[in-house]
Length: 248
Image (tube, rainbow, N blue to C red):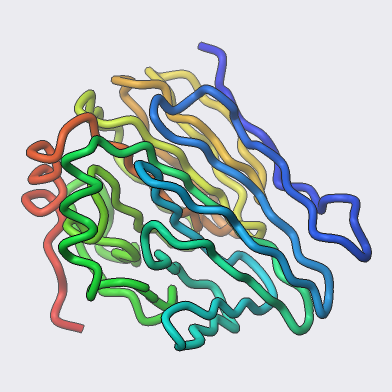
């Protein structure tokens, strides 16, 4: 089976912000963009009705000022800005970040407007809630970065372990999924029993409905962010049922 993936190579821009569309058309109803800001860089992401942006800082530092408040990330973390307003971004030392743009129904958009006090939503990666599920070993660290209920039909989390370890093969046809493999990681994806070596700093589309697992060998590191795109809101109960949140 062919695997759709791309590497997040530095964008060629020393003085101006730069943007690249990643895996275009792979996820129905969503667009994934890689932005880079140079040192002392600024840019404004234009928002519009029926679209919601989700940001994840990969490297550097990032600030976003909305509703007379400045929200700052100086390490890996997620930011869901205030829906329906432009997103002014700035960086002191430079930034590399993902933007996930979700297409929303009118009903979803109206519900977000009624829940505007919940935004901007900011979550440092390091302090995200931990969870366990049946496909992962006891030594695996799993994080909920954007849990169900924050934005419609979407959630984000991660898996981290030192080899040897594995994530057991499993399937979930109720959602589409991307893996963002962090630079320090080197893993083998098992897709319907076929091995695919994936190096760090890659974005991978997990084929819809496939049996997939992850293997990391001794001396290597497994560390990736998962991005789940559900087809309907009710199916997000899969996450709450299968991910058992830990107390610490």
